[in-house]
Amino acid sequence: MSNVTYLAKLGELTLKGSNLKEFENRLVNNVQLYLETVKARVFLRAGRLYIEGPESSIPAIEYTLNHLIGITGWAKTIVCEKNIESIKKAVMQTAILAKNEGAKTFKIDVRRAEKTFPMNSYEIAIATAEDVFEQKIMTVDVHKPDALIRVEVRDRCFVYCDRNTGRRGLPVGVSGKGLLLLSGGIDSPVAGYRMMRRGMKVECVYFHAYPYTSEEAQKKVETLATIIAGYGVDTHINIIPFTEVQMRIKEKTPDNFNTLILRMCMMKVATMVARRIKAKCLITGESLGQVASQTIENLEVTESICEIPLFRPLIGLDKEEIINTAREIGTYETSILPYEDCCVLFSPKHPVLRASVEEAKKIFDSLDITNLLEEAYEKREIKRFAARDYVAENFSVQSSQQ
Ligand code: ATP
Ligand code: MG
Image 1 (cartoon, rainbow, N blue to C red):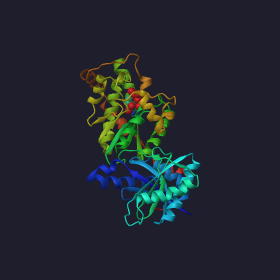
Image 2: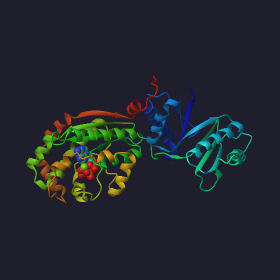
Image 3: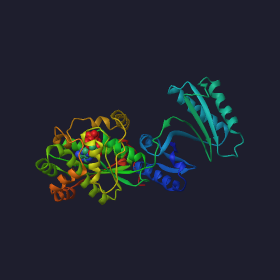
Image 4: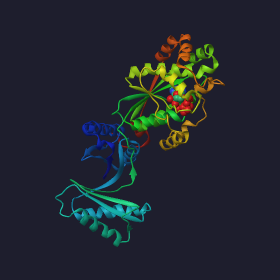
């Protein structure tokens, strides 16, 4: 069976000077993790990432390249001999494929990294383009072509159509680890995704108030974690049983402070988890002014109890923008499933809009809740989700013992 080759272009990486090696290694390592159950070879050469595998690995490789963070674009490429006849043949093949996919105009872009090749870039472009328009496959448009066919003359020749954009950003893992407070809502998965695009490895914590929140609510969060793992290589959810904590809050807190005090309790336990897993920050899906608990004053209260940095990547985005990203990454449909989250069930009719840190801390301290929070932390359940498992389950590929 013949092999297929894909190439991906590295984005921001090329700018990063001394960190470059570490970033490149991380990217290759991430791809290898996605494709652990697939017979594929992954390597870097001259600032390009290459993946080679049998035809049966195409779905797995394309899933990986569609999800991988840290590339600006990718393509399935023809690899051919370094002579003009082979290059012409490869260009023709690529042009026919592009035409079949609806392209009417084309342009050829040649990069000649291997300077010993007897023709220059211009001559190669002319020679290869000739066949394509003489045989009326497509017409030339050098300004806005439907199909941009690239020819790269390196140690071998690569011919491909430049079309798939990649997920720019830094490879997951180069910016350390963060702990995402993942609810079943629309915002928090997007917040996690934003941080992954900056190279952060994202782990999750979910506060569950069974039986006030259903098994389905938890399943929903697990589905979101699977999607997050699709971009972040893998992730764990720490599921924290929070029913008793919520009951205590309900019983002993002035109604209008319920949500805010609950947030403080979440931060406290999240910090314990973060310490345990060596995460350097907490991440939430909060956005300024979105709900009562997200006024600047109330955000200050929530933050006041965190002992490590708290990142809120969505703080300046409006709901529309957040929803657009949620749709693009595939979390939206799950997020809008109608299971109550614990905050909704316990939320007061008239939540305090502008609490002071002092007042909130006083209430928090009066609850004498530290033991309960520690118990909840001790009872956490941990589940792992990995892109590798998704690939293994969904794309029937030959297994290998790599
Ligand atoms: P989301 O859509 O992410 O649920 P939201 O707009 O509904 O956000 P809130 O319910 O006020 O806002 O929650 C604010 C943030 O607190 C969430 O984005 C999430 O990071 C965190 N959070 C809320 N509830 C939970 C929970 N049950 N478990 C873990 N984190 C939570
Ligand atoms: Mg919510």
